[in-house]
Image 1: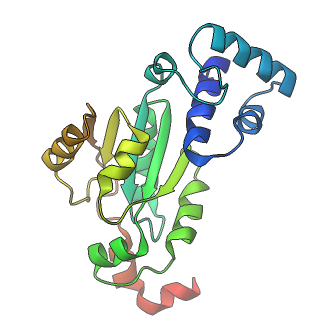
Image 2 (image 1 turned 120 degrees about the horizontal axis):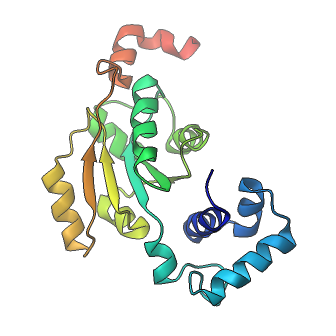
Length: 205
């Protein structure tokens, strides 16, 4: 089980990006009351893990968290996705997943996705191993990378991005992130294969 301190730091990190209430998220992820959460945050402010504003992490607090970033289209959630995201989650404290925009999905897959970017975000957000889900940037993927500042970027077994491209892009934004290519025990599982096999009938599943 995560320590209370780690739950609080993770929740504040997530809410810095999502602009949601950190107090509510901490209560949801722990057994603490609101008064207990506030007392714990006061203590962590004194220990310089949280800034005086009580809603952002200090450099010390941020460095104590290992953030993992993964991305993809996620049009049809299948076992390959679950395997990849579970493997990504093991690598750190927080898993942030970036869902491709509709336009990016069309460029990558050469066809319209079955689900809109908002629908795909909600699908991924519902997965238990995902801490935060964002919709990506069309013009520059490294804008989102810079926003999250992960220590590790995970690539799936079938993603076209090359490790060198990711590393060089991170260097341009002064981010020292590792790139991990994870393998799937179900290598033939992909949204494209599912669509090819089932065609239009998939809409009735």
